[in-house]
Length: 191
Image (cartoon, rainbow, N blue to C red; front, side, top):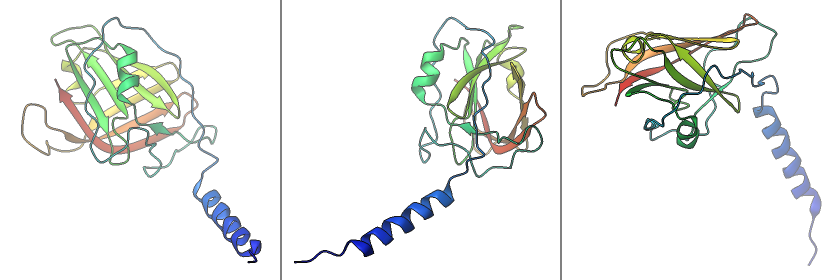
């Protein structure tokens, strides 16, 4: 029996070319230093059931300005959220269809203390903070970290009933070099 290697080799080369065409070498993670380390461990929000936790958002709006490198946010895993030990009574999260959650934050009710959150830039989990605790996050908030600003803006009414319904929102990520990227998704706050 004789085996012909050339048809298989041609198929493998074609597969390699197709896979290379799907990748985007311009997407580089951006490092942001932590702002503070809170003390207690909050419950982590449940990710959307149809989206794997390791998803990166590639289909949202393009990065505008800056040094030319793309802003790429990835979904936070429940282990990353638990390891961060965010303190607060209640939390909020921002998710997209492609990745859930992209941002998680915890804060205390009726407190002037800041709410602390997490965002995953590329493969690096970074801390952010917003003034005013949980109450200040309900209708959107602006979080900051070293070299970043992340604004959540509500864009419509709640999409369902219940104690903590999700609302359509945008997440605008601004980097210190002037780069900006807007992600459309949903903002959900509650227990």
